[in-house]
Length: 390
Image 1 (cartoon, rainbow, N blue to C red):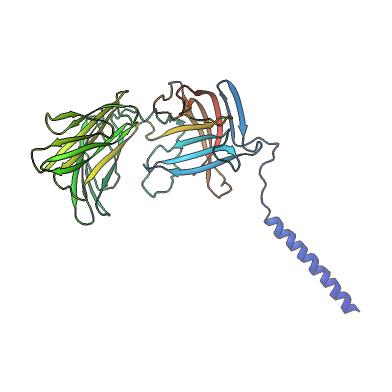
Image 2 (cartoon, helix red, strand yellow; image 1 turned 180 degrees about the vertical axis):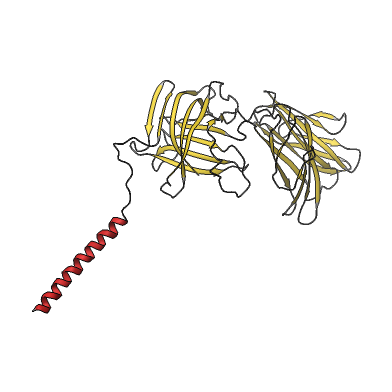
């Protein structure tokens, strides 16, 4: 009888011990709940849109804060924050801020959190691109070839400096005109040399022009324009086939036939201008017979000296579904538009485990309907706390 009683007591003790252990394990695995709905919201947006006050926050209704990180074609990090409805992309009421890093990164490099967020004023994208390439301006160069990779690059920047990088960034200490030369050799040993003239003392704007050609034999070469950007702004162009050999360029799909004196390699350039005075330039070494399979070309972009590549743009979708953006290359932002990054602190990961930063912003701008040149929204007194990916 005593043995049975002892077994029952031991069983009861084991049972309660297991219950206590389960409670301890469950307590240790308990997830922390988000802040109480009665507390202050973390991510907010306050501003007037054409005089109508807008006050929204994540947690209101089905609104959420979506954070993202991406890298553009120039290896510049873009930090994206979107206040939007859950499970709905590009829906009415969506508000997005895209903040571009102040510097370009080497391909494959991770984000450097010590330098990725510079506090202070940021220019709106489309306004700062028309920057002055003055002393201290940085240029990012890229070389392209039709040959067989991998390639060897030999750059000469015209100021005594060189590089063997595929996409070098070079800073010119003094204003002036420079001829950049690239010798590019492919894996089969095919080599090509091309050059491009740049100026660090004139106004540089983000307009582009490029051309291609086909050798027809006996010195005849067919030229045509392959790109103009912005296409609706380029108004005139001029071919330069050598000293004193100029011809007007048709900046569409039209072709131009030019006869050189004989077989050889000739430098040819194309100059274009838009209605705002922006000069676009492209140059190539022309082979009047058969061009090498590794024929190369140079492209470049100016990194503005003021915060370098740092720009921002804002997107908003109105309640009627109309999309607006601060980035309109034609209309641009008035001088009264401002954007200031007041604070940037690390924040916890989002639902997908993406690390985030919490940014405190202040802004005034115009938002444009790109489908209607007469439709825009004036945003005043903008204040926001947004999360972006990092």
